[in-house]
Structures are given as structure tokens and as C-alpha cells.
Length: 348
Image (cartoon, rainbow, N blue to C red; front, top):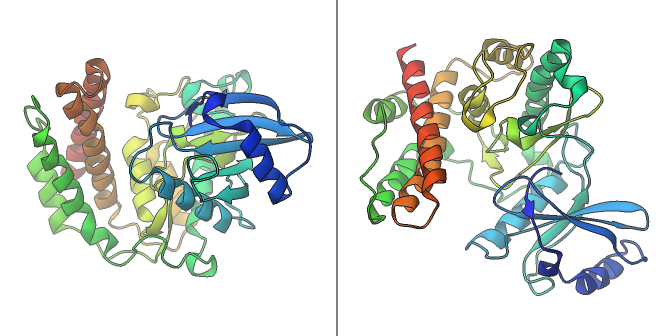
């Protein structure tokens, strides 16, 4: 897996985990080859082997946020709902929502044999533009498979709040941006086209498409590709998954897809030649989905706005000494780039 922070094995009581797995009927031998896995920034991953089967344990960070345990329960629920679908994802093995077992909610999933393209391409992919072209279309095909799942058939009642989902977006993120003014030293949001973006989103909000499952953070850093082909092995990092208008995800694809040189903030991939242009990916989605894409610009601008505001939070915290200044500056530069892109989309 590529999604998670390295976790000190001491954070997980191996004896307690072994006893829990015994009760769940998940093997009988001692846990072996225990190792932390690196990747994302929010949650922790531990890989181990039992009875020649590889398991990945996912749990919240050592210092949990207020909603960390509920996030784990939600992730496990959506992964369980995706069983027996065509969606490439880590298969859920078992989940434990009771924090009394390991001090946090957690779940076990299958290991994925794949790689994260933003961390570097293997020789097989780096040497062949045709393989990279397949990677781009497979990236969209995986999203199409997710958006084709009817959540009403997957026991997801109460998962997210699809009613009024689009209406809540602009006020929610505008309020979050305004809250940063409470950070000591933060000079306020100096972001290009801010007023124009907010006005565009308020005036042009579309009617939502049919409710589906939203990944919520769909970009190249949250998928793993097969090592032997230009195909998606798994979509990872499901902590923002919910029910609502799935075109939110396609808006994120437009917002984050690298330009012709392969550079897109923290999503840079080299070599980039061979990857499809964003127009080709949108056309591919359109040709294989019943959803109306006539308002896709709105979703793309929302993706830039929402993601930029989230990143700006670290910049604001850096002024208050709650985040490294260099990291805050980097994320602020990415936010400015996203707002510039939103401005270009609005101008057509």
C-alpha cells in the first residue's frame, strides 16, 4: 500500500492484535514480517504476514483527531460495500470499530501489488509512452466503475448526506477560509480571483447528477498502478468518501491533472509524454457515462476552490507556529496555482 504514514510497531499491541485475529478466525500462527508502510499524511499502515497471508492494518495517527475513529469506521464501511464490484480497491478483510481493542478503530485489508506514479515510474512504464497513455485512461476507467455503483444496493443508508450536497459546498468552504483569520499572524487570504470564484460558484451551481459514491480525493497520488501494465491496481485513501454527486470527483481530475510538461504542484510525474490530455480524459468519461457534463467547469472550479482552501489552512497555521513555514509556503504556492487555474476556467 502507498497510503499512510510509517507507524512504529509499538503503537500497535501485537499480542492484542493477535488475540483479536484469533477471535475473528484470521489465522493461527504468530504475526511475522511486521513493517510500517509510508505514503500519505493522515493515517497509519502496518504490513505483516500470518499463515503466509499478507495483511495491511490501517488505523488513525498516534495523536488522533476528533473524528479519526469515525473516519476509520467509514472507510471500512465503504470498502466493504465495494466488495463484488468492478471498482479496483483494497479488499476489506475485517474491521474493528471498538477503540478498546487497540486504542483506536482499525481495519485489515488485502495488500496491493502496485506503485504510486507520483513517487516515480518503474522502467516498464517510464520507457513506453503507450503504457503511460493506458495509465491515463485506466485512471478514468477506475472512476467510471466507482460512479456506476448504485449506493442504494450497497447498504449505505445514512452514509453521508446526499440531499443538498452541492448547496452546502460554497458556504462550507467559505466559512473555513474565514476561520483562518483567527490564526495569530495570518495576514488573511491573498488569493487571486477569490471574489470571482465565489461569485461564479454561487451563480452557476448546477442541478446535481444522480447520487453515487464519491471518493472525495481522487487524484494521481491516491491510486496505485499495476507493475506489469498501464492499469489501475487500486484506488486508495477513502477517508473522504461519501454519497452525493459523483461529478465532484471528475472536477478534481480536471483540477489536478498535470499540464503538458507533467507538472501540477505535488502531482508531478516524469516522463509525462504519452499521458492523455485532460480533454481526452473528459471525452472518455463522457462517452462511457450517462451523466451530463455540461456544467463540468463548475465542478472543476469548485475542486480548485475547495482544495486550495484546505491547503491554505496549513499556511495559516504556519504563521501561528503550528506548522513548518517551508511546508506552509509550499502549500500556499499550490493554492495560488489552483486559484489561477480556476480563474482560467472561468474565463474560458
